[in-house]
Length: 217
Image 1 (cartoon, rainbow, N blue to C red):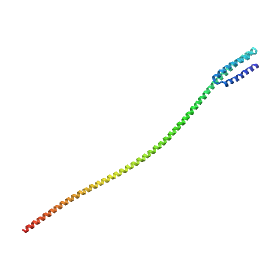
Image 2 (cartoon, rainbow, N blue to C red; image 1 turned 90 degrees about the vertical axis):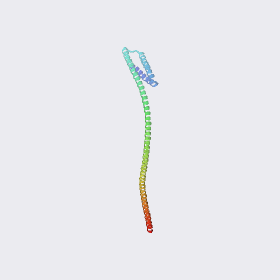
Image 3 (cartoon, rainbow, N blue to C red; image 1 turned 90 degrees about the horizontal axis):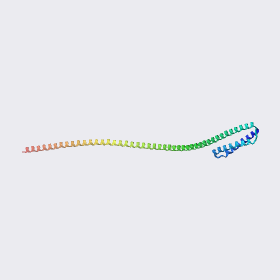
Image 4 (cartoon, rainbow, N blue to C red; image 1 turned 30 degrees about the vertical axis):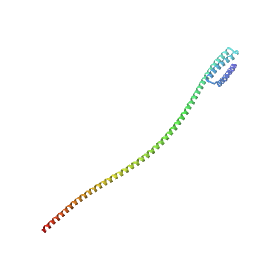
């Protein structure tokens, strides 16, 4: 049994070394798995050849066969575990690659978001400036409109004064015209009276002369 243990330990040690070397030297996961399967078959053959070179009792042969079966089963399990680990490594690398892609996309999105924020801030700033400018223009227009309204109100006031003055002037003209017509009428009446008086005086004078004439006769 001691000799068997030595052989098993040698195979196990050889297995570890060969597996490590194969894993370190493999350039791809598929090549690594195929190489691992070939080496596993070679190790079993080497172990069988090493055991068959010596003579053992039937009991020892049974134990050796059991050990061989256990070793084959263990090697198969190890190979499966290594294959699973290799697949997990592939998945891990794929996950890391996807993670890097996601991080890159996230970084791009952050840059895009930063750009959008800058654009939005610039737009907001321009909007505030435009709003302030329009507010100032509105105030200027309101002041100008107020000034125009005040001028119009002043002109309307002057126009009303002119109308009142014109009305007063027309009334005065009308009054003066009435006075003038009254004076004309009064003058005409006075002239008629004077004419009658003159006429009467002339008639009286004629009558007086006629009477004097009669007296002389």
